[in-house]
Length: 516
Image: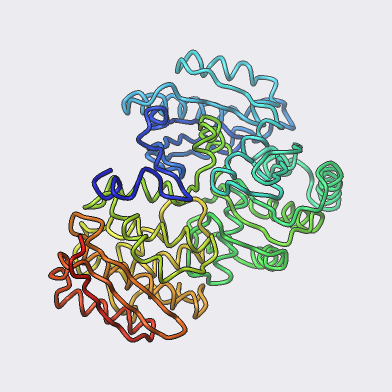
């Protein structure tokens, strides 16, 4: 870091010092994973040893490798050719990017097909890569670990649906418990005649899974492309303003309404409105049948979409425990500050400066305030007239773990006010409806506090002085060291008064003569 960090001590309690510069973490700088699934083949390269995954490269093809496996016992011939070609391309890309070795895993289709070993050998000969075929319960464990990458203390049931299988895993306070696998993938269900036979098969399988896993978990985490497609369609039906699938929440009632709504819509129309591929749209009705049965049987109070699954679980597998325990949001924001801010290390100085305004906030809000201070200057390269938009776009769409949709909008609004006094006449107005009035006000106060604090940055942490806030008396005081009084110029004064106005407070400024 820099002098700011040194002046505040080694650790920033209760979050500790950053880990991404630790030599032991550098092995995570570029991690490449290939997932050969029943429906898709995907390469993801994760960048940076931060606690939240950043996708340096992400490409997939929908090869439908598992189509027909139940009927023929063999991998789909066309899908097989496309899958081998995709893995070969991914291997060449990884070599050119200096990412090696790739971790390559295969799931249900290759696991169940008679010619699965032959396919693995073909991949080895064409690419030199070893294709690890993982058992169903191991797939469940890795998917659950992917969820833990985004929710470190998650509790509930993880449900990962692929093309040919569906896995469940129990999470209890951040640890993976019981696991189960089934044959409820939509590609496999396509091979069962529609009607009562298929309904009975889905119902009986889910009943058996519930008997093994229990039904007492309040939260259900959904992993997999078919679940994400249903969530995207739920957003479309509701005219939901934020199209970020990770941490999107649904209820049993909304799922029922959406499944029925999909049945009455034109697939071509839905494809054009949502960008969901034709191959994926064909699987959505079957996935919807499974999801309705699942939530009916398990009865979760809350249903959350996770964009993190088996690939992120493999990244989590490589993380040391010290990194796993870190807050994914705070670590990612630290990484962004170190990489992009004009004055890396000033974020925690700014946090200390503004924190008197937020003495009694709950821990989850405290961490978002900390994240805002770390991100307050990472978009400085944008044109001054558009920095507020660049900030909001960044946090509302970035790959950040440990952040709800409300949290994203709160963070975005705070950073908008860091660069702009007013939120009127912005294109983000529909998103503000995700917050209540108290949240909107607190985000405005935070943004204006950062906007003012950044005026006093200089190169010394002590130059910021101290804010004192007495909410009952509506009194806001700034105490400045004498040597920093000249930093409190006209613009700084205007921003201080804007902060006081947001707090409906009487501002006062005190210069501490003789202070160091």
